[in-house]
Image (cartoon, rainbow, N blue to C red; front, side, top):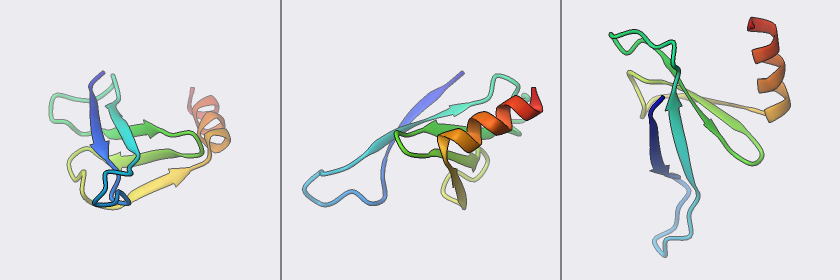
Length: 72
């Protein structure tokens, strides 16, 4: 699992910011075809590892736990 710290796009010039660590799934293929996840206090972020600057999805921690329980 790899973590990359990333400063929030909502950060101000005065460095008042939130940083999140994106983690790649341990099920990622050698071709990097995977989803990255970042756990926050109020949400869980999801993004495509091939396009980290692209669209992101945010869900509640409860919804994320429910999803994981379903796919396991």
